[in-house]
Image 1 (cartoon, rainbow, N blue to C red):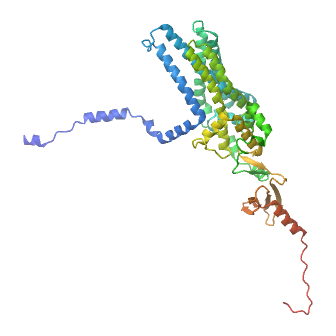
Image 2 (cartoon, helix red, strand yellow):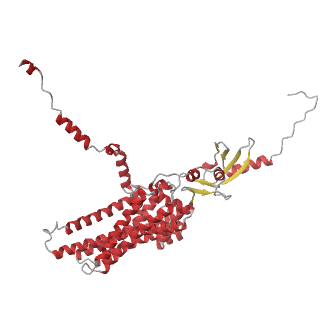
Length: 465
C-alpha cells in the first residue's frame, strides 16, 4: 500500500496533445509572414489620397443601396413594409439610384479608357511608356504586351457600354414594362467584364516580373546625352514660387479672362504642358464632373415616384456638380508637390484642404495663378527651369578653354544680388565659376585692353637696388 501511494499518478497528456494538434491544424502559416505594420501604414497613406477618399464615399453609397435591395428582395423587411406595392416602389428607387451611381463612375472613367485605346492604335514610343506604367507591372516590357493591353481595354470598353445600355433601359421603361433579358445581359456583362479584366491584368504576362535586355539597355545612361545636358542653356530652379498672389489677376488680364470664361480648355492645356496627362482627357473629364451629375440625377429623379426622394436625388446632383471643381484642386496639389511650390496651410493647417477650397470658391483665380506660374518657368524633366539667353535679365553661359585642359564655364546673371558673388564648384571634367555678368565683362575687358609691361632697362654702371 505504501509503494502504491508513494508513486504519483501519471498526468493525462492525451487532452494536451489533442489540443496542440488542433492548434497546429488550424494554424494559418501566411498570416505570420504579413507585415501588419507596413500594411497599416500603406492603408493610412492610401486613405489620405483625395481620389481614394472619393472612391470610398462612392463605395459607401453603393454598398448601402445593395444592402437595402438585398433586404427587400429576400423578404426580410416584409414585416416592416407589409404592402407589396410599397416594397416594389422602394426597390425601384434604389435600383434607379444604383444605376445613377454606376453611370457616373463609367462616365468619369471612359475618357481615360478611350485615350488608352487611341494610344494602343498609335503605338509610339511615348505612348508605349505611358501604357506600360498603367497596365504592366513595374512599368517594364512584357511579351506581346500590345495584344494583352488591347484585350484589357476592350473589356473595360464593354463595361462602360453595358452600363450605358442598362441606363437606357432604366430611363426608357418603367419597372412593369422593362424587358428582362436585355437587363440581365447588361448586368452580366457590366459585372463580369471588369472582373475578368482585373484578373487578366494580374495573372497574365502583364502582371509578371519580366525585365528584358532592351529595358536594361534603355535604363543605362547615354554618355552623349549627358554631355549634351552640360551645354543646355537652362538652370533648374530649386525653390520656385507662385507667380503672384491668388488675387493678383491684374498681372495678366488675358489669362484672367480666359481662366474665367474658358475654364475647362485652359485647365486641360495647362495640365498637358506641365506634364500631367493628355489635354483632351482632362477637358472631357472636368466637363463631365461638373455637368454629368446634374443630368444623370435629374433624369433619375424623374423616374422616382416618391416626391421626397425625388427632391433629395435632384439636390444631390447639383451638389456633386459643385464639388466637380475639386478636380482642379486635386491637380493643384499634384502641381505643388511635383514642382516644390510653397504651400499655404491657411485652412486648419492643411495645405491640401486649402488648395481644394481655393478651387471650390475661386476657381478662376486659382487657375490664373497656375497658368501664370507655368508661363514664368519652363518645364524640363518634371522640374521648373529658366532658359539661358543673352538678355540682361537672364543667365548666359560662356565656354572658354583653360590652361589645364578642363572646360571653364562662366555663368553670368543679373537676376539677384547674390549671383554677383563668386562661387567655384569643381567637378571631374569642368570648373564652374559663377560671377556677375557686368563684373566679368569689365574684368575681361580690363585684362584684354591692358598693355603689356615694358621691361625696365637700367644703365650698366648703375648699382643694383
